[in-house]
Length: 401
Image (cartoon, rainbow, N blue to C red; front, side, top):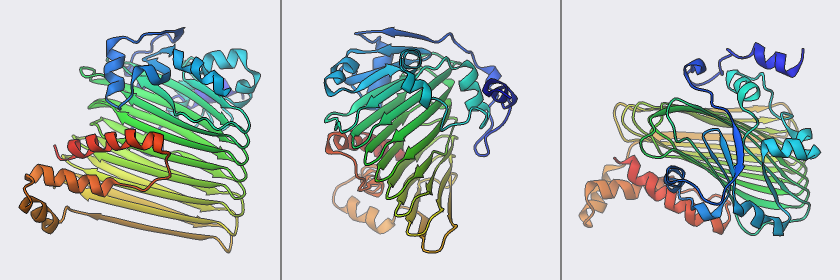
């Protein structure tokens, strides 16, 4: 059976987690690619919601149209290649050899739709061996019209001994109320290479979000993922999987501020395939209104001399919200050391009273406590930390209403 036939057979296959979505209700637009030096106001509005500036974007995708901007050319002086995926698959044999190798198009209906109808939009990024890119690579994925499905297929290859920091902002401008985002990402971290990936989400109450990500980290490599979502959504369901070779490392952090009646099903899995590999999965959840949050974290050790830890902490700000923490650890070899801890609680009255006694209003005091709760000492570069701190300040304000 061909790959296309397998994808067609999965066109109605639901994901194992998260609410099932009838994709036939949404419009499929014709995908396109163009170079652009200026972005329209709706895209700029969306980018600003995740703290991105148009002048620093290497790749922009608005609905089903990819905009290849001037920043991508500026990266050429570091020998970094940034192209729309469809263009890369046409021009670069290396890109063709990587596409759909980590992710199976028949995994579920979302991967099947992306393979069959996505038009291979998204970004392709290649960092040559030994190159350490000193500036973050910024990309933006925006939905600016209602009732559409946005597809992206992102492929990143950081070659041997190289280092790159990728920041992707996903957002919609004010006024857009519904739609679906399906994001396919295949990340390759070669031997002794390092990739930091920061994902910032600011969606809308009627949007369904279905990222699908697989990462391969070779011997001595390191992958750091930092995921933040702070806006109301209809639903998010994501479960990235990271495969770690000998002495490879992964740090997976997620910060979730849920609201409205949204369903947030967010997790990650690390497979410790090589001896000496290690992984840490950290999550912070703040839930309010009637939102439901499921935080899944899984570690699977296939070799001895491997280590992994899961930490899931939740904070309930509403009697109608719910948080479920679901850690899973599996060891298939003696000598692996895996651990997990999970806790869900409320804002402490004593701390709240103390801050209010110092002149803070109740809302200000709650925002201070929430901001402190969400702080994670993640190994992200200082060039990105300022932007992340800005987003976390927004998250804290949003979380308390």
